[in-house]
Length: 287
Length: 257
Image (cartoon, rainbow over all chains, first blue to last red; front, side):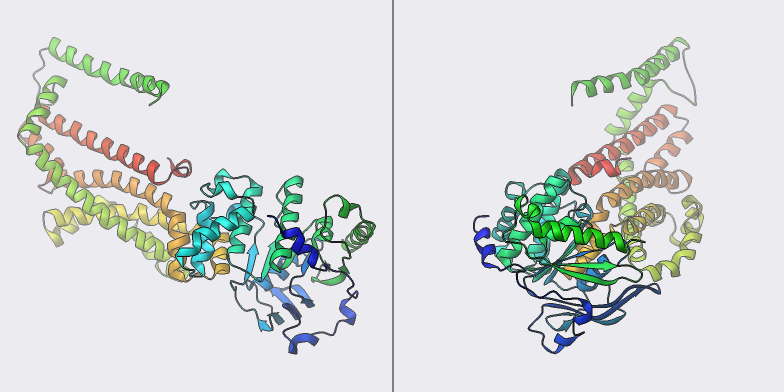
């Protein structure tokens, strides 16, 4: 894992971007220009069983950006992620990837589920679980073993290729799920509260791993979380949703130095200020 | 085998060995000469003779052929039906009533009908065994499919697997341990059904061998065949448990009954 810090420092993470709010964003303005944004929500409404879940979502996400979504439960965080994954198509409006509408799941958009224990195949060992993604993409068998080895090592599972998920800790299982997603060579990784079930230490370690990966691979990340500090720590932008129906309440730009550090970043005045703002916002949004 | 396991096995033998010894001693003390029961030692002699003259092995081969062919067919049909109905909900709704009408029919109640159609012989016996064993396999495989972790289907969707690939890579491995359990049950049922068919009508196999011995007023041989059938049943069940442990290591705890 040598070399990631170097790459990540090359990225100017989140610095010097104008603060945007939904009101002054031209809705759908960049639709005609698919090169600018990798992902785009354009006037997206989602209804599930006749109930409005999301309403009037407009959002553009740049390549290589980490966007974290927070909000009280029922504000449509996961639904937003599921429209990007193609599992839940919008009722109105469009969700675009490189200017193309997302209608069904696609392999260049990977998804990391929170319940890693259910998303892994219990009858396959770690290596075979990673290989699943390669089987899906019909990658030639010849190169698979080396690539699996590389991905497992990258995720800190180097010596555990033969272990079955049941023989692994929660943190290791989530690393394995991320390794499988990376085997899809995705441009976008969707993460649905991926570390919610893990203990604090493991969570912090995995947060740093995600930051390193994104810096090294220029992957775009859409990250749903309950944890406001996690959102600030990871994100270039934090999207705050409010419920009934779910809509974007505010977008917070995160101007924190990079690479981030679990101690110093979390003590940074900008971090504390944002933390305060977000806490106040969430408190205000709750009924 | 570990030491505690071995001593437990020895302890389990105490009661049967005592019962057999008591029967032998009591029978000899009473100068047993019966047309209904026999001394354990006479049963052993009858068993040895039947094995030596090949008649018992011939009958065993006949029963096993009917059992295995019947189980193979029953499992194949049950699994196919279970997969089809588990995977295709509209088909499930369409056929649910028909299946609920057919399934409660006691398998042995089909014996007269099947004999009318197929006559005496292997075909009848195999058909009835297949009918009787397909239901447990069907019920278990259908419910196993409904129990497949829904998240795995989302993983399959996210990775863009085709339908045949989903079945091959997700559904079948998910349900395999429970299908094997169903197969184990089916083999047990098959032996019961096959012997029943042989005893009631079909002039084949071990059931028929018992009836013949009974008609010859030979209790020792009748009981010898019974002991032999018990041994075969036990052997099957041990064998399948061993296969299960080898085939599904670590997953056995979920299905061990």
